[in-house]
Length: 383
Ligand code: GLU
View 1 (cartoon, rainbow, N blue to C red):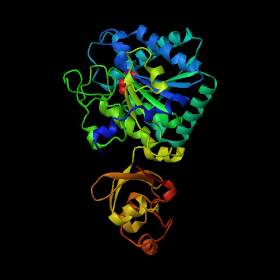
View 2: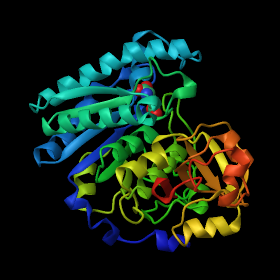
View 3: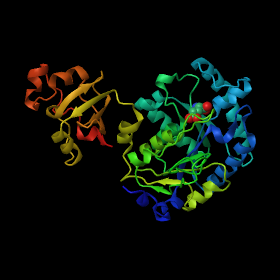
View 4: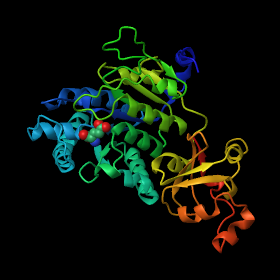
């Protein structure tokens, strides 16, 4: 796809004025400064804008970073801690300060906030996912502004979402938001690093997060920021394939949010793909890290992609990883590129025995047959 097609004008944004429920991600770099910790004026200015949206009848969920940055300043640490317990301690100190500032800032508008801390597990485990969703929905009904962050104090690296761009994407999918806005210190995705490259142009519209788009990423992470452009593109891929649009815009220019919601061509707009995925399929697609990988042959791939069929054992050529029945696995074809995810009916050991087999031979190979399909169509999501 040529870049000119990705640089379309405002029509792509027609739906923005109708957005009712939105998730706004606020990066550490916006609300804190190295050595100083949180910047109350910045939090105040953001809260003013968010409060105006809430007063217009919009439902706003904030995903805010800044716990570690704030904790570092309060503990007198000049370098971002390296050890996990130190990061967790900094986050614990900083999170309460972060919430205190949001409380104060929203209270000026008569709006209450709620602290919501989640980990990857809360999103991967379906009952916890549903609980989190119910709670957020009730908070919105009470006209409260939930302020979400990762529960850094308990989430060690292996089980973390890891960055708040991806967390915000998961939250947007979780509550079925109409829009995700990522506020950051640049005003969108550029064709180069605007700080050093005078030729760099801002992309106004991205139709799809292609490899060409991914090559534009010029990550230069600051000391306090975790997520650079690459995590923002991961977030864009997640939400747009759930059918939710995303905008990356400047959190430094006053009035940006209001203007974005009017449909003005600020920042970079990522066009949602197709229809909204139903809640369960969205969970299969993005909420759970896949536990294994199946390589399928070309015939199976086209049956799944073009003819809407289920995956049968005969199409499976390779099984990687150890997983149980009922877990999410990733599907790729011979080129190694993932094209779908689904809930497997068989565990890894069973699949190794029946891969390549005809459905009628499953019983002979396993001694039983629980299902004809490896992944039923209803439990399969094309990416
Ligand atoms: N959860 C981390 C914090 O609040 C930030 C993660 C991120 O910025 O992506 O400090």
